[in-house]
Image 1 (cartoon, rainbow, N blue to C red):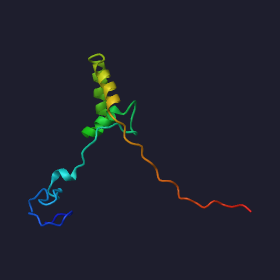
Image 2 (cartoon, rainbow, N blue to C red; image 1 turned 60 degrees about the vertical axis):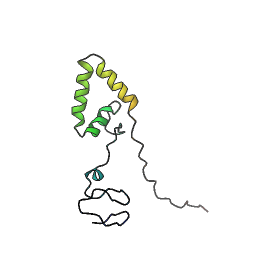
Image 3 (cartoon, rainbow, N blue to C red; image 1 turned 90 degrees about the horizontal axis):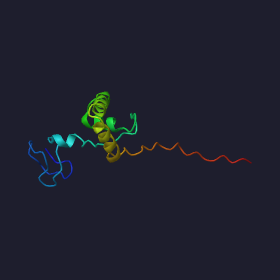
Image 4 (tube, rainbow, N blue to C red; image 1 turned 180 degrees about the horizontal axis):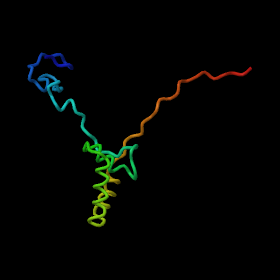
Amino acid sequence: MFCTKCGVRLEDKAKFCSDCGSPTANNAYSMQPYPKLSRPREDRKIAGVCAGFARYLGVDVTLVRLIAVVLALCPPSAGLIAYLVAWIIMPSDPLRLTEAPPHSEPVLHS
């Protein structure tokens, strides 16, 4: 096996390159991106806090919303305060820019 960055020959069991330190295909962590806890701009009902936690944990958003409602009602105000704090602390996803339409030449009238 060879390193894809520097080309050094590696052992078949190597998880990182001994020369440049880049992860190899044997490294399970190189395959999974680090999940970011943030509030999505789509699929939000109030502020996107439950949708963000559901995406981060990999569970259904309805289950997270149900748990949030139960926590907001059972110990009065503790769940509501936690939701408000998460709303303030969790960043929103960045805006997605759409592609601009193709540029057309202006039509000159004579």
